[in-house]
Amino acid sequence: MLDVALDAFCCTAKQASGNPSSMHWSGRAARRALDDARDTVAHALNTESGSLIFTAGGTEANNMAIYGSLMRAKQGNVVVSAIEHPSVLETIEHWCKHFGHDLNVIRPDRQGLMDAKKFCAALNEKTVFASLMWANNESGVIQPVHEIVKVCRQREIPCLIDGVQALGKIATDVKALDADFVSFSAHKIGGAKGVGVLVVRRGSALEPWLLGGGQERGRRSGTENVPGVVAFAAALGVMDYASCAHVRDDFEQYLKSLMPDVTVHGDKAERVANTSMFTVPGMDGETLLMQLDLAGFAVASGSACSSGKREPSHVLRAMGVDDRAARSSLRVSFGLEHSQEDAHALVDELVRIRALLRKMAGR
Image (tube, rainbow, N blue to C red; front, side):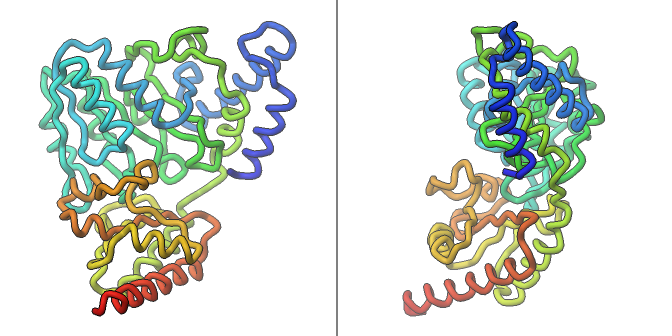
């Protein structure tokens, strides 16, 4: 969490501790803080303040869009990419089964890039919802969301764009995108965990998600997390991940120079600047992860939201990577605090661990 966001969080928690729905002076102070933060977030995303629904994170924002749209839809089919975050894929699978919709899952190419023409070819007069992420959370590959949203708008198909991994890494002009729903999460840019936002385009139909007090214009009841939202607003625009590109690229170059058999996934496609996912042949990804953890390195083997699972990455599977190679993969995310020396130290430790594990295995 960024210092500026933490300071904003603590200051708001102390000075605007009232319920923003209350009419007394403490509630009015909280309402002013919430409204000001809403305006700041809307301006940063280039959208209207009234289009924002604050949530408990990107997962809830995605669930809200999917349920709120499918609840109103006539029976039909849903088109989604095979590389979506579990909060999209699993939720769509659940609600398609619940509401009786057919599901059409579109696979990307071997670089993890969705073919816009292929995706749009699956859209038809019976399609009631479509979803594609802006940037993949495992490979970092940036997806052709503008082309797909354009077709969805022409055909009046509600469309969700998961922008969680895009925020702070590429331009996220919501007005220019013109999707029905776009989701974001605060902690990806140094805000507080447990805060997200769903941007709903004016005129897009959405059933209420949580019922009760009627907050967020009746679309998501529950007392708003005012300190978290203010911290979200404070964090916007502070971090620029573009500066991570040279560290990530140098890391991959050094890695392949010492381990020529390593495969970097999505390196031929346009990616966000801080993400690298690669396969170390013959090695178990979970074992490498644990060994790196003991050495002080925090990496992942797939989505951070599902790293506790033993299943191989569904993203790599969708890209045509076999299960054995997928189980031998790691995902590294670089931050602004990381240097070339840090990247080289990680590679050196990987080389050491691999040699040690091979020696123990008698190879």
